[in-house]
Image (cartoon, rainbow, N blue to C red; front, side, top):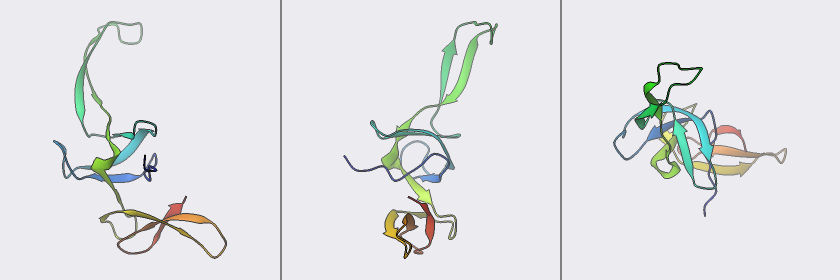
Length: 108
């Protein structure tokens, strides 16, 4: 199993599936099953029972997980979808880098 290089809060571009071409931020991720939940992507309708919080119940629209392989990181500096690389700085810190422009995305 490959290591997941996407993190919570990353802006991603969806490259395949019914939501191809959409962008959003990662809300949650499940590393063991390689799934991510992206805001406003893969919206499903769920039926909910009446509770004290929601006394009427009814249909709720919510995001459903998608496979992490369907998303690419959007580089903050160049703004394009890119693959994620790893590198070491002179100080010895491990960082994620953009494969297109070579800029540091953030610390790994």
